Image 1 (cartoon, rainbow, N blue to C red):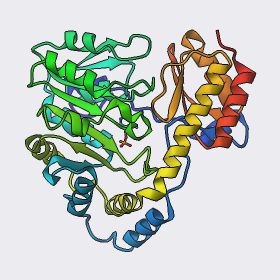
Image 2: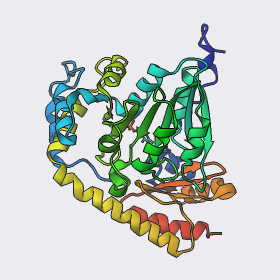
Image 3: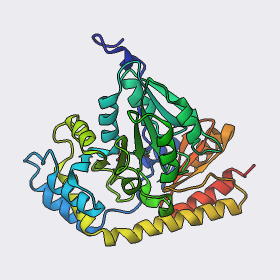
Length: 361
Ligand SMILES: *Cc1c(COP(=O)(O)O)cnc(C)c1O
């Protein structure tokens, strides 16, 4: 029984399920040397300049951080070549996503998104008392025509993860522009680019291609995945200055912490040291995809730092067989397994273990 009179929309909220930790799998199965390929984390520790910046900032955590992260927003704006008033920072891109859902969704409103997609979308929509409208994927990819068709006068938000989590497919800015042409301009389109840095640049850049021409587009990005700062929490939003002011009003005070502000400034300054790691992860993804397709697996186009094995009804069984052998992946029951690209050794271990437990078909 809940305590007090909790909001009706909170009663049925699902609990967010993070990827299983390697130690947890070790305890459950009585094994050692498990590897975690379940949360799309960067396998590499931060570059030394970032660790040094965190260490220096650690000595001052008796002070509150700069709530507005002015130095960081200025650096980000310079890096992206846009005005500072088009950028908001927050505690991860999920923090900013939640600010956006809080800003727009009331009970009775609808948020439209392709499905399967990021698990936070139905949770954040439901939490506001609004209705999630799931538009089925076609061949594991977005059907943006069907997304446009699903928009009604009750729709306030369209949520597009590109590349998509968990299927890894991506849409171009040209395709999003066509969608924008088909929906009212008071429907806000969130382009969630958590995996942008791993994707083919030919897909376009929403910050350059869409934001200047569409006040109703807001782009979300993160330092968690490509920059390896998942543990510190930093995301940013790029959009119309008026939208940014409104999103900022919902920022939990001081939640862009001082360690991550320092770390991100160092990451931007030393991006040349980060780039080779990114390139290595993309090269490894190509290698893993090549090995899997060479073995006969049919995979959706992989544009992020993971691959999606569409195992359908076999998902739960293959997931468990991999985990018993120490390879922890992320299952989507009845749909498939999402497997994060790790270090070359981890990827070899995944490929070898998969060969032991499952054949394509
Ligand atoms: C991982 C992920 C995020 C969350 O990133 P944080 O910045 O760590 O909050 C957002 N969107 C999608 C689609 C993701 O997969």
